[in-house]
Length: 252
Image 1 (tube, rainbow, N blue to C red):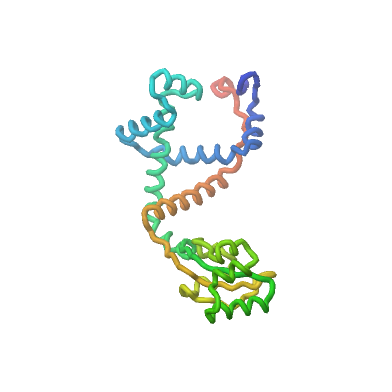
Image 2: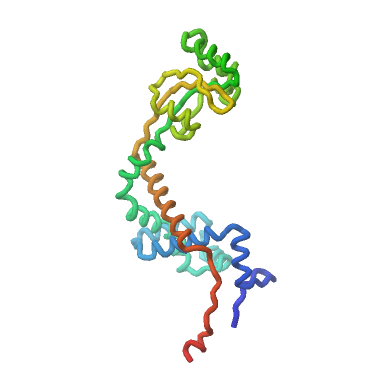
């Protein structure tokens, strides 16, 4: 006997459910959940960790009484066992991430460091080369400050901040500007460079090297996890509806 889903007065066939998951853009999240559940299936939590996770979930949803808890479970179509699974899922996932990628952070950090270092820099842009050269010499000769000239002459949003931009990852600006910043010392002023329809004057203000602190470790582990997860989703492919023989036909 074929089964259907029911929401209110609406009945939804299995084939239509696949269409709806795609229409509501929920398919990637659904596949993500399947992959994560399989990955963390063997991860264990202590009884203390389980109790703390459940207490945190109950506080989050204000399940302060048995009646409130029972009503919430019913509204979500869940059992108390499901509640524990939901409560401990994020903890198990963090344990899985640490076990799988924690020992790879240092080497990954070194490979990613050129993209993680940040800079503050000043920028002036104009479409007039003659003006760009004049402004460059005014700054280099100390006639006017970079900020004064940027506010008066720069033709981009940086004019609002006296030309100052950042901090941003060093590879975020246009490649031409990034290359200048990578070989600059703080305070180094570059003559006008052609960039598309613009002529730009660039000065590095501050280099902020990336540090492998706790926050960076978490960020890099999350990056490695997301890369792995996206690869797994691609390998899994889309959810498909397959036909199975009735149990009576299989058992004879």
